Image (cartoon, rainbow over all chains, first blue to last red; front, side):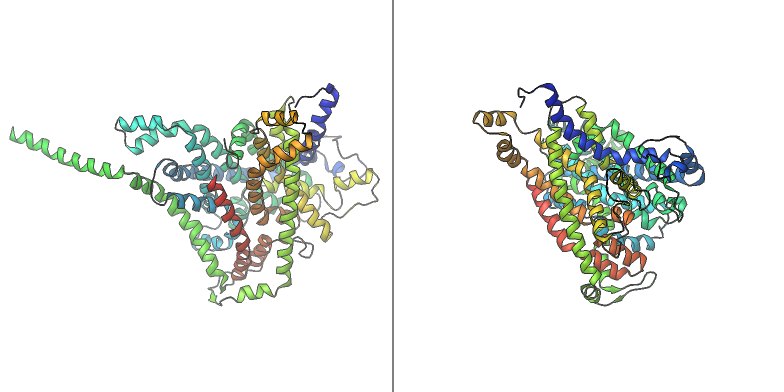
Length: 281
Length: 310
């Protein structure tokens, strides 16, 4: 594909379209960041050039952390995401391993059911689920979302892990079986340790999906003390008066950072997981 | 001696019993079903049961905090006579169709732009995925502020470039509100499209392009006759994914417009939410949510069969 063009046209052909997509993708985050450090006098003055910060301040962050329950929401979000991810990885593995390795009647039916459940969007289930949560007296408890997030995460993890498990060679397990290990021992001591990259991919996805979830949290968690970041930000930081944008953007930025950090460490795993479902290796 | 041998006998029998149990447990089918029992029970209780219960609810008159009474198909008949319901159906199809088309075209453009050799490619790819990673509600709040009626940065930039003051009312005008939510949905979903298609592009063997070039094929012909046909399965899968989740979108609309102005951006999910949670009509709300089922079921079955065949 390399042609005889000069370096400047070559650079233009790369950076013009790539630059366009980059500006498009990143501008909202830039705007979020600079809004969060602008003083109100600058934010609500139409005569000030808006794209740069003239007198940066951390006031909005201080207000956010001292005058709202943001830290508590962050703790709730993390707790829910970690526990829901752990549950989903365990239950997902329990589904994926037999489907990847065992031959038994009904296995393809189960695999298809799991794929179908993964594709059922939450709006189809939230009304009956809200009633179920009420009947179990779980409203306004973190348990309500810890229990319901895995309904979407378990099929997802199972599907992603199933694909990964199939790429792991069988020889080690066969050797262990010949040496007399039971199926459970083989799975636990031989097979699962080989699958760390698959668990990381599935885990990151489950974690980001938990952080992103909004509908169930909005319905089940109506008390400030149990809210997650997305629900808290939307329900409590948007207030009647107009001048709340600095604090709101500070909240949006801080709420995005945990996901962004985890993502930046594991971006290759993330991309691998993203494309696993649709691109054959 | 006798005592000693008797002592030996008892553990031996127990060991044999244990051994036969171990043999049964080691059968492929027994092991598999035992292993899957817990997750399957979990999914049956929290997906299967609510799904069936939702169907039952849709056949009831069920105000919140009251017991329901069976009313047959009354809720669905009410829906069919509700002009807002039909508005919602049209909105949902427009939103899904246009946003998916934009994501497909933009995603293909993104993938082609990224499929060149340049420095810092991995960093650029990581940055481009950010809109897809960051919790939707939080990035949507940034858009809400960017389209603010009084201080919209988009409008200030447009006015600076010569657009008459005060600029468009992005979320206040019914048509523009639909345009806005479509653009923001596209903004969020495009990286998923682009990066997945990029992974697909990278599997296209370069020999094919070289052979085509030798045969005299130009850039467009190489794209049309090599790239597109080889990408087709990936495009199909990503599109089905995207359609399903755009069709049932809730967060973006809830944050930006709440379905307004005057139901111009109301989708099935937000309308069902308003009726069930706002007005407290669980039965009627369930019937609106279930109205999504025929289209969704078709898409889900198609995608499941396709994924299975892969």
